[in-house]
Image (tube, rainbow, N blue to C red; front, top):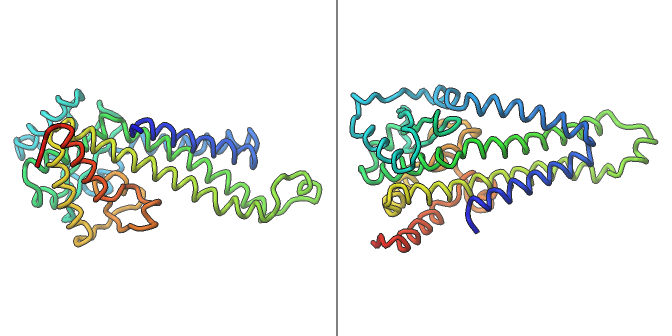
Length: 288
């Protein structure tokens, strides 16, 4: 199944969960209020996403005079992706990593850490930049915002139920309520977890898609595979202060995770990503 189709299906499942829980808890009015509140908050985050995240990590724009070779590389990849050239930023972070941000292709930026510039060779860095440009081309910030809006609306609805349980209902209301106390508590605990799992699955699907799209843009899947392996080996050796809410932006998850926690991870395992890139290289005739 294609990664784009998978993302659409997961968004559909998340929407279905929202409609089911919303109708059960708040009815149409409660559902509408929850979606509006979540939508407003995430729209603001989406509209100012580039400024917020770049300022959060103290990023500064790299001028063409400073690194003409880097600008040529980004411009060439952007042309191959058929999008405008994004701005380039440097994050003063020793951990090797990179991310893309912005509302869309016409207003976008790629950011690289000081650590990644020291670690990777030119081909590997080109693979990483192609991956980030793929995120821009695929409008992944918008997809992530849509998922966050629906998941946030579900959280609002669950909070409504939680407050209703705290303040209690009259006996008549309880008799008319299809949810028992035990069922309501289970709903409060389980629903946000399910929503988070689906949201993280969407994020992982977009990472796979960016790997594939980026490898096709650069024409060198193995360079990205080598870069991911290097980055993965260094990320946990060089910790970084990263806001959990922005961890999904980075090419490699800057926070620890694994095992069962992969369900709640914004990124697939690096081993799986590398294996898929090697398989793509074989299909493209780019052998070892």
